[in-house]
Length: 143
Image (cartoon, rainbow, N blue to C red; front, side, top):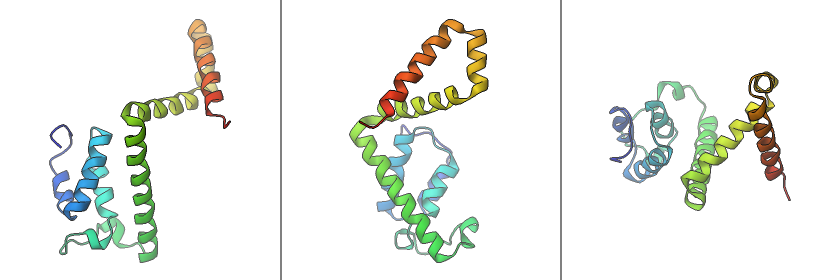
């Protein structure tokens, strides 16, 4: 946790959950890098009641949710957390960053205004970007 940066108030959110859940949230924080308070509040707020410290009340934003909806959100978050940590362990943080960068680049190249700007102002680089987008698109196709 020493290498994880974030606001001091995040530790109050961590104290709302039992140590087992604290470790899981801390692993997510470390994997993500710089952490915002809302990033820590969300997994703490969507923690199963059995993993909460007894005298903690639900977040006001979540108090109005029905039990079914809250349970569904808890399950979704648990699945997403598990998938993220599995991918991180299998592929490493650098690969996850490359996947995110590729998807962002693909979205940029799908934007006609961005494509026109690059073609008008950076013709030589635009050809490189276009070739990269084509190769990226082919890599994304299922075999």
